[in-house]
Each structure stands twice: as C-alpha cells, then as structure tokens.
Length: 216
Length: 217
Image (cartoon, rainbow over all chains, first blue to last red; front, side, top):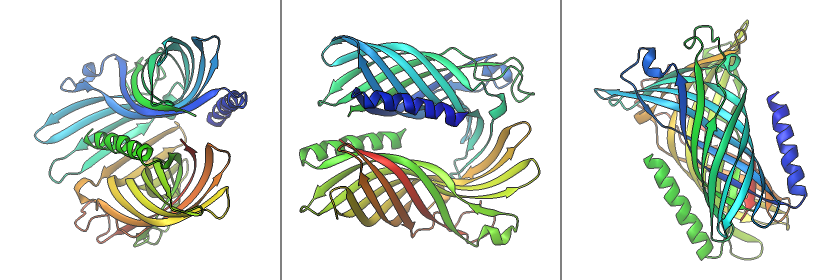
C-alpha cells in the first residue's frame, strides 16, 4: 500500500518533470501541533504544558502555469507532524510526544501578486507512514534520557486530508524562502484503540512549516 | 534548538562562501544502510540474534573546488543517521535491538574525475555525534503495533568521531547525480563510563553505506 502510494506520486511528478515544467526541491522545519479531543490535560496529566514539536520536512514540487500570474503546483513531501506536551520538575524533563510521519501530496493553486512573491492555497492528501506516541524523560545528572513508545500501525487512519496555505519569497535568483500552514481535517487515530488511548479520541494535526527551496 | 540554529548559520555561511568563491555546490540526500562493529559481538552473547542493517536517512550540502580539469576537493556538511540492528524472530513478534547514532559529518574529500560523468573521491571525515543510544523494539503481528523503549546516552557519548569515506558519483544529466559511498569509522561512540550498556567496555564503531541522489545548484 505504502509503496503503491509512493509509486503513484513519483510517477505523477516524473510526468510533470518530463513535460519540461518548472520544478525544484524544498526543505525546512515543521512546527507541529495536534488538536486533541478530549484534551491531553483531561487525561489526568494536568501539569503538562502544550508545546510545539519540532520536526523536519523535505520534498519536490512541479509548477504548471495557467497564466502569467497564476497556476497549479503539485508536490510530494515527507513531513514530520505531531505534538509535544512538556513538564519539568527538579531537573527532570518529562515529554509526551504524538507523532505522525506523513507523505503529503498537495495540489496548490498559486498566485503571483508581485514579481518575487508567490501566494498559494489548496487541498492536501496525506498518507501516514508511521504514527504513535512516545514518552521521554530527560535527566540532568547524569545527562541522559529514557524513552518508550508505540507505533500504532493498526490504530492509525492512514489517509489524511488537510488544507494548506502559504507564501514564498524569491531571492538570489533561484532560491526562495517559504512559510506554510497546514490544517488537518481528519482524525489521525481510529475510534477504537483497544484502550491505548482514551475511547473516541480525536487528533487533528495542524502544522506550520518554515523552510527554503530551490528552483532547478 | 541551539543546534538547529548553528546548523542554519553554517548552511547560510557555506552557501554564501560557495557563491563568493565561484565553487560548484549542491545538495545530496538518500538512504543509509547502517552497520556497527560491536565488540563483544551481540550475536555471540545472545545466540538467537541475527545481525541486520539499520536503515536511516542522510542529507547535506557539498561544495567542490577544482584544482585542475581532473582533480578537486569536495567539502561537505551532512546529517547522517548511523547505527546497527540485531533481530530475533519469535512467534508473532520480532524483537529488534537497535543502536542509533545521529551524526553531523564534515568530510573533506579528494575528488578525481576519470571521465565526464564519473567522479571518484576519498578522504577523512570529522564527526560530531548529536545523539546516540539504543532501543529495543517489539514488532507485534496482532494487533499490528511496534512497542519500543530505549535510552539516549547523552553525556556518555563520545561526541567527536573520525572516519574515512570513499565513494563514486555518476552524473545523470546537468543537474542530477547518483551516488554511493562507504564510510568506515574509527571511533567508538560509547563513552568509557557508560553505565547503560549491558556489557562493560562495549565498543561500537560505525560502518555505513549510503546510496542517494544529489543536485548541482
């Protein structure tokens, strides 16, 4: 399944590239958040603060112009989404992570309001390669950490649907800086997780990415 | 956070210098097939264990200065996920014992171009270990989940390492190239005072094969 999705995506992009369209690569940081319902604080862990989970993204894109100032953009990205809950006590650093490592295929409508700037928005189909949770305890002395977690393969909804919105700023010819917000609309977890997570739990990703790209 | 910042500054500096000196430069990425020479060998200690490869990911920047038509020097800054995996099959569950080491690599590679499309290179690699540790993972069939637990070695890591690398790139077209590289480590990643490892005086030295693609910018 995983391979099929990947193959399909690669084929689409290869077609795009062979049509001599503009293409390039992009990469950067992802700042992850997860809208949980019921909220994590209500699970009996009220001392935890909701903080951002840092991750990484990388991908390729092709552009298909529809006119001088607009067009369509197809992408294939790997992105680390998720969320982190944090609590510190007497030198001990407790972290609770939710993570989703997602293969994303956005189709974005773009618009160029001026020469160096691109704005875009569109739907995103995602395939969750790996998802689960992890607990990590970092100790001060000795400076080591201990972790345990679970990849919830069977209890993950593999397909994810989101909407993305962002902008690019072109510099030094072929390079650009980029900011994007990806709002997840589907629940990452299955309704019944056999008691691994609270019943009927809902987790929707929302991710901010900041990065660089190159037109090739 | 601090590390990321340093990383970003290094990248910007490298790109800036590359364009100022009129160097060739670009990006590279791909998969890492990780292995470690672990002494004493875990397969001796636990007869059921089988030595496997640990898959990982690498990415980085390179810049090349040609001294003449055939020879040059390539400097790089890479992030590489090294490590090793030992597995044991049980009924309905596979147990993995994984050593991991996430490394920032600074190779300086002597490059030789025997033909237009090929480049051969070899050279020393200076390494900074960002994080290392080990992990036990239980891959269960029913329900289909993977339960894991482990330790990050933190201060019990030997942060600075040294390796040598040799490899080849093949230019597919003007922009893209394919690449295979072997990195042979000399340094033990586990610190002498490490109290987390099951055996005392355990040594783990990375041996890494990377296969990937790159682009010329």
